[in-house]
Image (cartoon, rainbow, N blue to C red):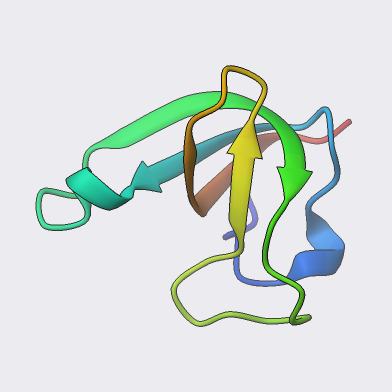
Length: 67
């Protein structure tokens, strides 16, 4: 299972676990389908920021299912 730190590993339509801004302290993960990639850098040490298809925004912690 890949972590979500490398932009090239993440594509729209993938099932991922993200951490929302409000959950960063607790580490609670939210599962969803990637709609948009919001981080333009190729790597981010805390995870690539994405928007899920339900509109929630957070940093990818785990890629659950590759498209």
